[in-house]
Image 1: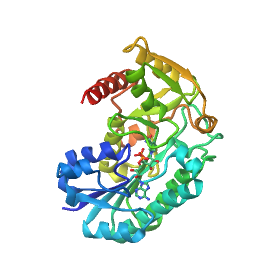
Image 2 (image 1 turned 180 degrees about the vertical axis):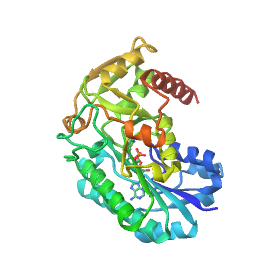
Image 3 (image 1 turned 90 degrees about the vertical axis):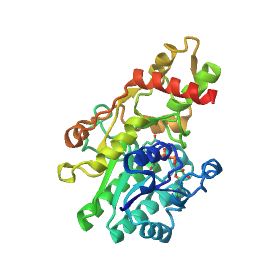
Image 4 (image 1 turned 45 degrees about the vertical axis):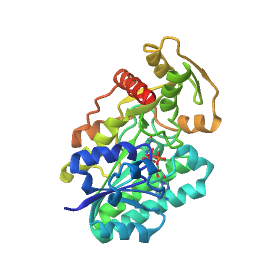
Length: 320
Ligand SMILES: NC(=O)c1ccc[n+]([C@@H]2O[C@H](COP(=O)([O-])OP(=O)(O)OC[C@H]3O[C@@H](n4cnc5c(N)ncnc54)[C@H](O)[C@@H]3O)[C@@H](O)[C@H]2O)c1
């Protein structure tokens, strides 16, 4: 049976997407890859060593060789630099985000393989309508991250139209999760706040109190990625990429929700001008109706459900 390859698999998303894929399709069908070496913990537990490959997505031969050797049918291409890191290192971000995507698409064209591309709310810009941001609208991002995401969407669509490749994508909002730490994005505060609330009952936030952005809990995000790849391709009116979101929240909303569980929790603000400017160039709330209509997108967690679950999971994790 043909296999699934995940690139950048040791990051925030991959750490939860890989187990979800393994559960859905069987561990033997999932090939886990990252530029980083396999964590020694996984090696100790003897976990699927044969299904780990060290792959640098900026090296086309490495991707092609692994895809051929494992007879890959679908690639979830997660390897990328995130928004804040990309602003610090724009040249490297272009090279990894665009070069890596091009290399994956080319390898997929040669092996007739399907590709999932994670775009982002960062693919929009200050001239995009910020509320109920439509599926099809102005995309003039002003960050290097956004430039690579908007260009990435176009490149994926080109491979669909020109080569008939099956490429699908989501415009993901900020993702909240407890398994792996976030990788340097503008919405990282929404994860950090939980850790600091539990440890210190205090969090100093780098975005202003009223900076509203779209968010989603990781279990909903991994479910959405798999559902999109499982959907009937004939029903997909859009390829790259579908707006998805589960909540539109500001730091003060999240702090108030956490305070329902930890009454002594306090938040103050020390605004990072770089990340604040990025956030202010992004939508406040996406219209996800196209995803609902075309492939049944239906997130389960709202702010209340996500906050309660995050606190339970993190308390368990800290105890261990
Ligand atoms: N996490 C979010 O909130 C979010 C939101 C929207 C879109 N996305 C997108 O989803 C994807 C995954 O995001 P994430 O949060 O898991 O990122 P992350 O930073 O947590 O993980 C990225 C992984 O890519 C790996 N990597 C970096 N350079 C590489 C290279 N040259 N070759 C192979 N691997 C390399 C890193 O080692 C890391 O494990 C990215 O494309 C990101 O833009 C993430």
